[in-house]
Amino acid sequence: MNKAEYLEKTVDMISSYDCTELEKVTMNRILELVTKNNKNMDITNNDSIEAFVEAIHNDATTDSKNLRRLLGLPITKELVYMERDASGFTPYRVVSYQVVEWYNESNASLEVALANGNSFRILGDYFSHMQKPSFEKDMVADSLSVK
Image (cartoon, rainbow, N blue to C red; front, side):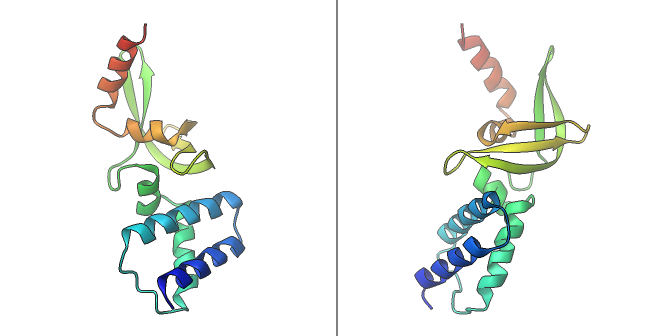
């Protein structure tokens, strides 16, 4: 089986997988990411497609390296939510997040749950920006430039 046939069978299996449409979209995007980054995939074993699809589904529904890559989040760093207050920004530890909706190929709306029990819906690009060391400086610079 060549790579194109393998991918076609994988996409077909994802479309028939018992999960939500949102999960299927996320799985297909992870499939694109994984196959684009892995030029030398071992695609000779037809039986591995089912295991591969299950692994992609797990990646799509948990805090996985592939989901973090897809959303532009740091791979190993603990995620934080930066809340603006009178003194600047206060970081809160993120305990979980999930994709709520996809807007285009790379941006999604996320539901983010914090260690303090609060949860927020936030754009993935903005949440990704929050993870950068320059976030607070960038936000202060943006607020100064808006008049």
